Image (cartoon, rainbow, N blue to C red; front, side, top):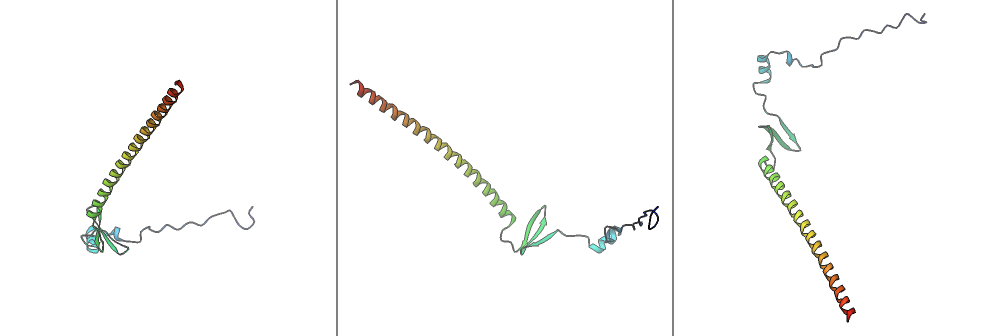
Length: 125
């Protein structure tokens, strides 16, 4: 038997409100076109004083930019070519160093053999 009242009975929760406070989704198409206009336009940004517009699947500078997207793509292509050339030159340097090491080792072996032969020839006399 409970001391201060009957059994535990929680209060009923009130129904939830709609997640969207906008009533645009309830409007029909013609009313939406009147409210919003026929063309919504392309998305545009202004970041750090540079305006960007989304056109044909790419972000393009609208104003205030010093380089265009074509120039950026040319620079990226040139950068890729230079990186490939750099890698090729590194490989060539590695190959030349290996060849130099092999030649130096052979030269030391030949000099050692020559000294051994000289010492051997001097002992026989």
